[in-house]
Image (cartoon, rainbow, N blue to C red; front, side, top):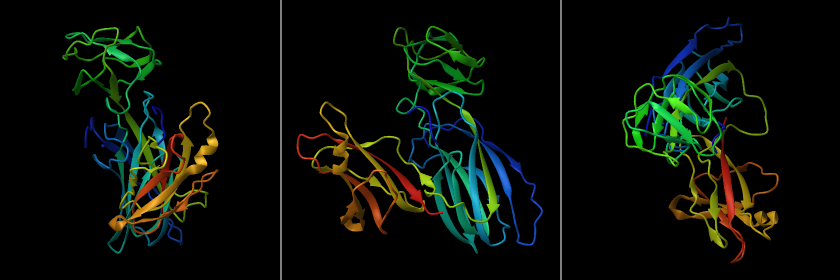
Length: 340
């Protein structure tokens, strides 16, 4: 998955934010609104790692006690097409008591809470690295030369002047660009600001490469509760499916802690092969792992999928395949529902 949705391994560039500190006139009911845009940069931190630098966004400690809503918007997504993933870490506060929620950021994400104060931090989880997301094109590299010729069968790429480029042949070194690269295809070149200093990566194979790209996220706080919609705020912790073989229970996925998880939305499809029917998906099931290794009863994902409450005390969620031996494997994907 290279276009998205919506950081300890590697963080590059400088973080900053642009803040609108203008407080709206306060009518009798105590209406307060505040908005802020933060500069974020993609990183090598994988989705669900919860690692990296937390970028400060809103920090407000003078709210009238009551219900508030936070809305999120990706103002300027990365231009290079590799995608991004961002978490918002929200800490609602009432009389010093802190309630934390973590949600995935995308344009339209909304969460509500009761507070006298609130802090919002942004955490990039874009997983841009050789092991994560990189360009389909490859780079032919000549030591001492700033000219990088692209090869392979991937789509043309775009790189901004403020991006940092990394090559798998020299993964620990970042290169700036001498000029933006617009719609550069195989057989064409990008130009680095400084000569390449790593080992040669000759054609036709060349070296895989990726970039870390800045983007902007806007957050707005308003008085009142979030709109009633059909889904809760969402947290994604994996972009990959878990594959479960016939007559088995998968290894399970850990329920994120201190994020406010209350439900799960599960999708299941069989591994497609000749004579495999989509009806096999009905043989998939979900179980809940409690403290002490106990497994509670679960449920069978339906069509359409619906949010299912997670029992209190659940530490892991297990996906199971009840198809008989010799049948197809089942592929499960999931999203966490967050209170708010």
